[in-house]
Image (cartoon, rainbow, N blue to C red; front, side, top):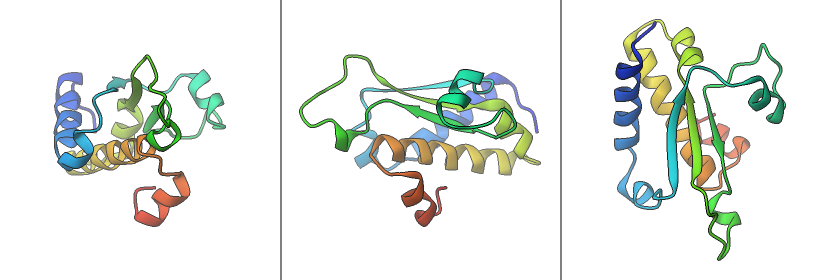
Length: 123
């Protein structure tokens, strides 16, 4: 299922807007960007092989690990359009995958591990 970049951005915006206010209000220092796909460097840095699939990526210092330190640059969540499109057979599936991916990466920002996310159904 392929959509234009503008449509994909709208879907990502809607997914972000659907987050509870108590999370949104704490995300002032988070940039959310869209890229076609993960770079070879991003894949390698995350222990993934070139054939693995990555829908999103959080890059930063999770809130619980900061203490009084606030990073000078914003944390970045990247949502990868091409792998999400390839995994989706309908607009509904694409929208659901974007919501799941956004929630997964935001959860990393709040300090949740992949194991914890798997237990919550956000893996």
